[in-house]
Length: 136
Image 1 (cartoon, one colour):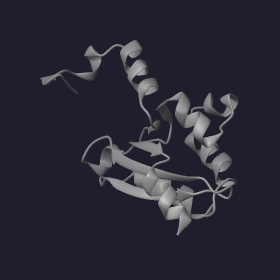
Image 2 (cartoon, one colour):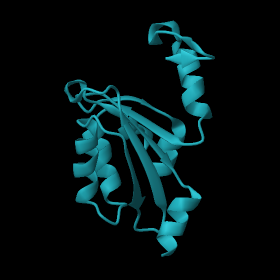
Image 3 (cartoon, rainbow, N blue to C red):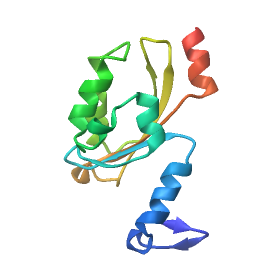
């Protein structure tokens, strides 16, 4: 991890600092490990996706995927793409359309450059680009 031009190992960052960074971000953040377990998510992610706390507490991404798919314009494609991203070494950017008219921009990146490690981080936002795409 790079902080202020100095490299630090993640073990040098306290859980409280990491939580503060996650919660201060202006995007919904979800981090999933190679076994599709939720490692971290911020409150904005939960709010944006309208996920009940009881589901977030399961730490099972499959449970979340099942729940959110009912909200989406393309419910079959979303979980397939999410699982693909968890096992990809590529960065990704796409738009997610909702039945109620919302559109999220998703930026995804793997934990590392090797597919073997799996897992990744997804950032979700409602940007001007996403809103303009929906209006087309």
